[in-house]
Image (tube, rainbow, N blue to C red; front, side, top):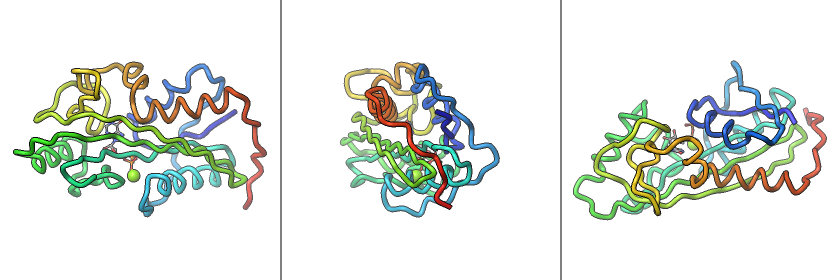
Amino acid sequence: MNVVVATSNAGKVREIEEALQGTGWTLSPLGGLILPEETGATYEENAALKACAAALMTGRPALADDSGIEVEALGGEPGVYSARYGNRDNDVERNVYLLEKLRGQTNRRAKFVSVVILAYPDGHLETYRGELPGTLLEGPRGANGFGYDPLFVPDGDTRTLAELTVAEKRAISHRGRALAALRDAHRSGLPERDITPIV
Ligand SMILES: O=c1[nH]cnc2c1ncn2[C@@H]1O[C@H](COP(=O)(O)OP(=O)(O)O)[C@@H](O)[C@H]1O
Ligand SMILES: [Mg+2]
C-alpha cells in the first residue's frame, strides 16, 4: 500500500517512518500540498481533517497524527492547542512558556496523547489512539525528539524523551502505541480498501 504521510512536522515524519518499517508500505511525503487549518476541538477531528484532505488531494490512503500534551496542574492545557501554545512559534519558546506557567508548581504530572487516523479516498477512516503518562522537569534535558520531549520523563524511566533514541521512544510513546495498533490491525488482515475517490 502506498500511504501519504500527512504532516510537515519533521519529528513526526521520522517517528512514523521508523514505526512502520517492515510493513511493506511505501510512505510518500506530502510534497507541496497544504493541509487545512486545525479547526477541530478534539485530536480526532483535527487528525481527520488532515488525513481526509491529504487522501482527497492525492487519491491515496493518507495517515495523519494529531497530538498534544495535557498538564494536570493546568487543567489539561495545552492539549489540542499544544502546537501553538502561548502563541510561541517554535519548540524552544513553547518549552520556556510551559516552564513559566509551571513555576513553583509541585504537581508536575502530564500526559501525551496521539490520535493517528488513516483516511482512504473513499471516505473510510481508521482511528488509533495512544497515551503516555509522565512528569515534567524544571528545565530541558536531551537533544533528540521534538516539541516538549526535553521536559518530559515518562513513567518507568529516569531519562527525558529527548534522551531516548527514536526506537526507544517508539516502544513506549503515545504515537508509538497508536502506530503499533495500526500495524496490528493490518497484520491481522484488514482488507485492502477501494481507493476510488468520492469526488
Ligand atoms: O511526541 C511528542 N513529543 C513532544 N511534543 C509533542 C509530541 N507529540 C506532540 N507534541 C507537541 O504537540 C504538538 C502537536 O501538534 P499538532 O499535532 O497539532 O501539529 P503539528 O504536526 O503541526 O506539530 C507538537 O507540535 C508538539 O509541540
Ligand atoms: Mg493539533
